[in-house]
Length: 228
Image (cartoon, rainbow, N blue to C red):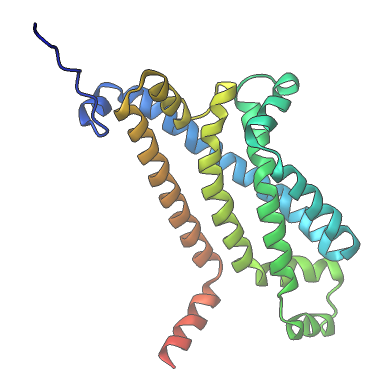
């Protein structure tokens, strides 16, 4: 009685990558575009929200609390709740990702604004800066390190959350993962997973580099501290 061996099902396969590069490239581009758009939109929304909350401290609690409540909603449930109103596809996933990134960004912007040296704001006030002008020209630039830290966390988190968008048919590399799980194709699962990890690392590095370009004074200060 002859027995047939099971077909090879390796976790790593360059042959799979070569044969399915078109699908991989399409999923990767989708993943990157969703991540970039979600983080940028969340940042655009978070800056004015945090600014208003900083200028009106009574609003800080409600703003952070509302963002926190949205963050606690499971991603699968949030996408399912949005789908009947925003449809199946990119819009639903993008809205969900923006809502999740908001809490991290709003909180970090507020922390950064609260940590501005009072001597700096006192000096600006002595030069005749009004409250809004001080926020835009003095406090926000000083809060940049905290804002960049928030963008880093939001970016890496978003890279991971994009994969959940597969539940509404638009999950970037999550599409490959889901397809691999359904067919028990190890190479497809591992390839998508590795690309997600690499994408998160590259995105984090890019945010760090942008942060250093935006805060040259901090690098100079750190250099002086090391020299001392």
